[in-house]
Amino acid sequence: MRVVTAGGRRALSFDGAVFPVPAGVSDEAALVLGVHGVTAWHLLRTCAHLEPGEAVVVHDAAGPVGALAVQLAVSFGAGRVVATATTQAQRRTALRLGADVAVSAEVDGLTERLVEHGPVDVVLDARGGEVFERSLAALAPFGRIVCYGEPPAVDPVRLLGGSRAVVGFRLGDCADRPGMVASALSELMGLTAAGRLRPRESSR
Image (tube, rainbow, N blue to C red; front, top):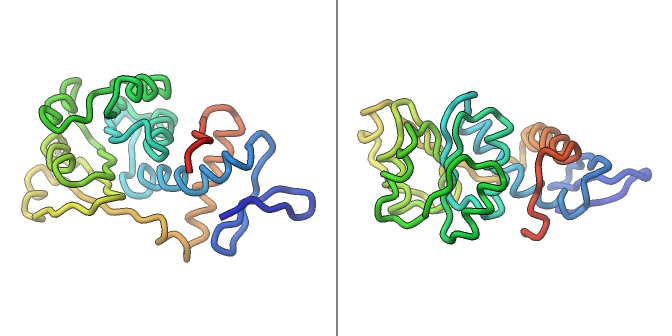
């Protein structure tokens, strides 16, 4: 992925397709959006089908995907955004990005911290393992966990109680579907150009 110039205009080149980069979006920001931004957008829009007013948990909220997911969840009308992060500094970052609550990512007591302020409808999880298990325990009826990193081991029977869902996402699966990339980048670029989305330009 790289930013190219054609006909005096900048564009993001993604697996042979090109997408316009508007004025006000730096090359570095465009590259962050092309990977981390598209991932965060699809986690919320395509996989979680986030509805306005729903409560969202974003694990690793100070990371490159998580930081964008926090901002997008707010922009998409989430009723409450709960961020998890390892350090106090990371939790402060998540709050500055728009999270309503920021809690420790420590596994012990994680379920209780996630539901302390109310039911959880959507969880974005890249860790799997015990984080997934504690998140599943926090999930409200008809809630969804979207996994985009370490794949969890889950017995489908456990999902029947509460009618819950586990959805997977891999950015590479969008490569043959340029429309999926275009729809995400169009909104991401617009939000960034308008100053409503702040990509972490130091992230790769």
